[in-house]
Amino acid sequence: MFLSSYANAHQVAKAALFKEAESLHGLFSRQPIEHLAVGQSLFFEGDEAKHVFEVVEGTLRIFRILSDGRRVITGFLYAGDIVGVSLKERYLYSAEAITPTKIRRIARKTFDEAVADSDDLRPEVFSRVCDEMAAVQDQLVLLSSKTAEERLCTFLLKLLQRTIAAGNRDTTLELPMTRQDMADYLGLTIETVSRTITKLIGKGVVNVVNPAARHFIKIEKPGMLAQLAGDDSECPEMHRDLMVQGDRRRH
Amino acid sequence: MFLSSYANAHQVAKAALFKEAESLHGLFSRQPIEHLAVGQSLFFEGDEAKHVFEVVEGTLRIFRILSDGRRVITGFLYAGDIVGVSLKERYLYSAEAITPTKIRRIARKTFDEAVADSDDLRPEVFSRVCDEMAAVQDQLVLLSSKTAEERLCTFLLKLLQRTIAAGNRDTTLELPMTRQDMADYLGLTIETVSRTITKLIGKGVVNVVNPAARHFIKIEKPGMLAQLAGDDSECPEMHRDLMVQGDRRRH
DNA sequence: CGCTATTTTGAAAGGGCTCAAGAGTAGTGG
DNA sequence: CCACTACTCTTGAGCCCTTTCAAAATAGCG
Image (cartoon, rainbow over all chains, first blue to last red; front, side):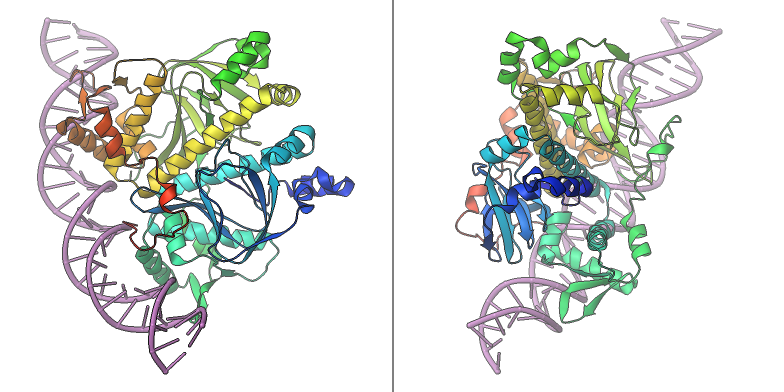
């Protein structure tokens, strides 16, 4: 699956001081940039996994199509992310550009050899795989036990944290994906996503900056958004020592 | 998270011919066996991830407790599985024995060094991480778009495939986990799990071998079980070339 | 400006949840 | 061996959130 870009940023930076090829980004930087138009596919589920990709610019969706036509989006890729590492023979999902996108590619064989040879690259790859695993597991928790509102808020919160981490002071988010994409990612219908956003606007938590641009959402009350997202980062401690039985809510 | 045991079995076997330490199992085999009683914890979410474990015998559940007390089981561990690899500082989940269990442990530091040093171990670790990632993603698909019946059937089917892979000819499954465990794993309530099993018995798909032993379930119609599980291994091809728009069902 | 795709809104139906009680199963100790 | 208790599992009834089906409103674009 995809690998988060904000993984071990310090390590990347350190390595870059010495030799560019000693960081994953450096490894890709020598490759030519390729352009993807909106809706264009990078690869398909089931294809032989011949390349590893770095997203230079833009956004992609990662998804599977089920036998009955339903689509499940398992993640989004943003600038700096790397796809195609934790795979064997074949891609387990399709990848498609949802905005005009720039990518670089490296043959898996080349990539694997470079990683096997470099003591700097291995920890970086490992770190990204760990982040990816953590992200999928969070998504698993979201899907197995959160309400529509909690799901939406969790999603928006993650996007918000992304832009804040990128140094953006404004709390206005650009949602490059459609409502249908959000629905397929959050395990909801497009109608529920739409209704839930309307409800959040009603509560004053978020707002559309300009009714014309529904893909720009301003987070008015980040604190409340985090509240509604539900995961007060779980609470493992309550479980420790004393098995607090009995008062399990829902599910 | 956990790592599936049937990963790259041939590679493991090959390495074992030469030197035992050149396979992951060999690496653990020198460690003393530790015993866990039913309900005993191996580690807690949030704990410093100091060890990597191999399950020698028994079954464990991997889970998180949410702030409102709900429990999400993200996986089960069986004999041969390895836990604690794809992690950074801390465990992202708790692990608890659901049957009497035997495990071996290795310090992460030792483990990481052994893997970094050995050209045989690295591919095996990589392979297991890939399998783990694929499993989590399948679970993600299950949770985001399957009905209660489909979830149950998918779960039973996976267990069936496990026992068949282990060379068992009988289609009777032992379910070491409680109904509540299954519910927390499948994103359902215990009542829905119970009702769905009753429904499957009514359809003649499965049966309880002996009403006294509800943890032993015989699969009477494996074919029908696979049907009801829903994932005719998805269908990526229908999507290729021609973007078949429009007739997306549900969600 | 007209056409199409996307999004929103409404009303009704349904699947799974909640609450509540009953039925088995085990374990304990007299 | 049989209460007695504690659990797990099953079953029932009603409700609620999300889905489904349908249509209107809004944006995007040639």
